[in-house]
Amino acid sequence: MVELKTKTSIDAMYEAGQVVARALTAARDAADVGVSLLELDELAHGVLREAGATSPFLGYRPSFAPTPFPAVLCTSVNDAIVHGVPTGYRLRDGDLVSLDFGAQLNGWAGDSALSFVVGTPRPQDARLVETAERALAAGIAAAVPGNRMGDIGHAIGTVCRSAGYGILDDFGGHGIGRRMHEDPPVPNEGRPGRGLPLRPGMVLAIEPMLLAGGRDDYHVAPDGWTLRTNDGSRAAHAEHTVAITESGPRVLTERN
Image 1 (cartoon, rainbow, N blue to C red):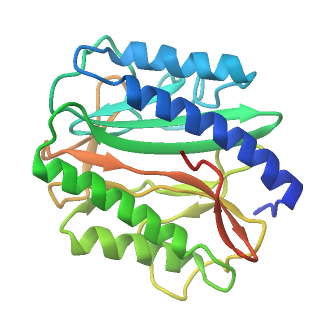
Image 2 (image 1 turned 90 degrees about the vertical axis):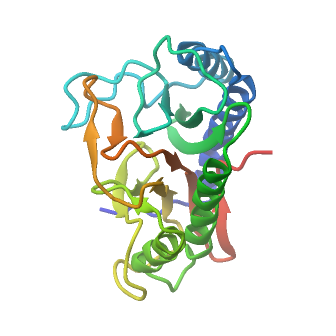
Image 3 (image 1 turned 30 degrees about the vertical axis):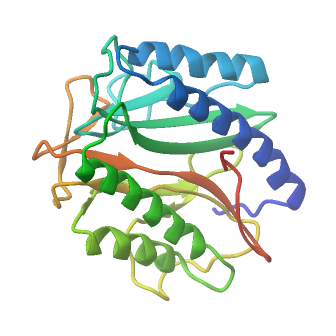
């Protein structure tokens, strides 16, 4: 069932979204050559504690996972697409990093992700990250009353495919509210004018995941969580929590 949120609820979700925004900004700013992924996770955890928020990631165990997720921050590096588990790995110059983070505050959830390159970016990596952000922007622009879910997927997919990138099989965005994952699913490809009608009060986590090699397939790493490209190519992930309103999409996890 899709829950429509009131303006008061959306304002409360904005507060949760701003905790997410602060944590991702702090982790991105701290991500430098020699910094470990565990250090980034602890930094993000500190932002949660300071805000009086909790993590919907820590201890999360969906049906596909062999163990609960052990951290508050997903850290996916290079050929890791999403769900990367923080380890003692220390970042190197040129690493492509995707960070995904969620927060629960006063009963409401926020969820967002970003990708960037540590140190000196390769041109192809900079293009991949820029395209992920552009695909996200296209999906957000389509999240308006009167459109349908297929319009969001079509907008995202058009940007990704026209750039020659793959799109992660089987995974996409989702509804969000009291829980991090709610109905409806939000596809990263779709047919315009098809699917669930978009209505004011719907809140969606829109999240394109791009694979540089152009293929869509992946495999699960031995940790049971991290999804990696089958061809070893790099990947990028961009995500925002977005409320559909009468006046247009409102990004609840916007970063200053």
